[in-house]
Image (cartoon, rainbow, N blue to C red; front, side):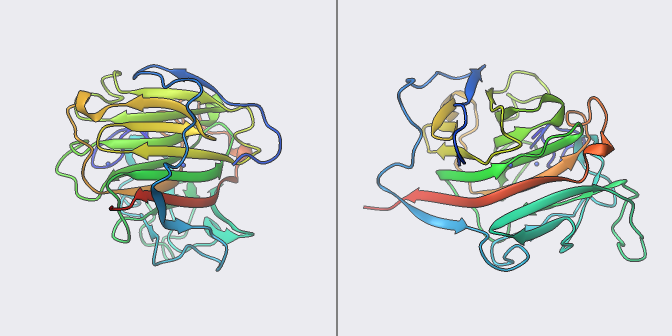
Length: 291
């Protein structure tokens, strides 16, 4: 996302094929293009080291996930309009083998929600911070995006320990804004290359059925490269050595559905499109095993 962690404003930043669907088309604006025939798949020497299949229980596993609500009273970054609920099934739940993050147009009773900052929308934001972080790996999140003007789901990574805005970098695996339905964004943010300057590595993937079908949003992160993909098709490759940030510190995963904001709400919020859901079928992380 714009950087939303520790800054007053940010686009996003501190979220499989089912049936027969058309292959996504890719538009790159930075970084060398991988060979068209090179699929983005889990390297053969990697093993699954962390996963959540969301196949049991009715709420996210507290051993894996925490709720991020720290800006509810002050208001969220980037001018976003939502309140992020904690342990409220209306907004975050596990059902039928999937994690559901659902946004509603509603106001709350401060007597019952002491953190409520007067927002007119509710949603959810889950993080693995304090539970699990990774340095390098292959990440795959199978998800179905919400559509509707004003929706802004994101799947992204931030450093577990941050010394300043983007000092450890930010990796936006997948973002989707309702005003540009069917276009998924992949980006890198650093102090010198970010959305504010308009020169950050970024790419888009056109997925006509992103809101009706599940797709696999992928990231391969190593010391030498950061490569994004959708359904095994590479979309953007970035070399950290060229960015001034090493991307070598532990990072945690964030899944959220924002409403409104500088980007998501650039053309307002269509309340008739709410409730809207970000659906996650699974999250899987693979890492190389020592010899």
